Image (cartoon, rainbow, N blue to C red; front, side, top):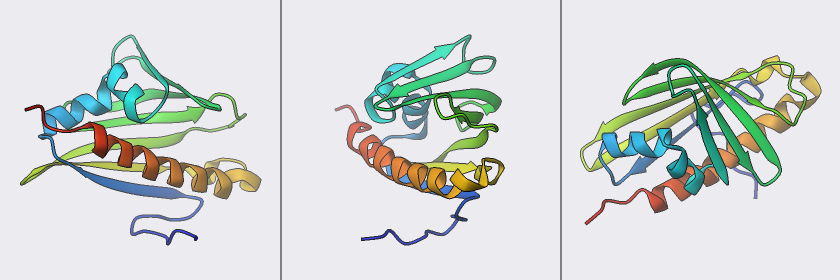
Length: 150
């Protein structure tokens, strides 16, 4: 079954995913910014070089290698990265914006990835759809692992 386009999605241009978490915002931020935690829900391996504000986030998983370079960071609520797949021949980066919002019973992670239209026209819709599914699955895993410690 085909997944419906969600509010905030513009096929081939940008995608948006939101996920409520049962942990407070500071804890949600740790799940977005600590490599050992990222490896539990987003990629098989995550590595940070030079720290968040100056460095790169390197992600490796089954069939992919990605790099995010920090563009803007306001800890513990906003991280904007120039994001690219290293093994795909992308000629441009997308922009990946990760935000954490407080909710009465925890927090919400808001993912916005845009700039797909700068990728080759022959591939941008396929790449967009791949990331749309990937973020759906990854945020679902995040909701499963980011639980309050009792």
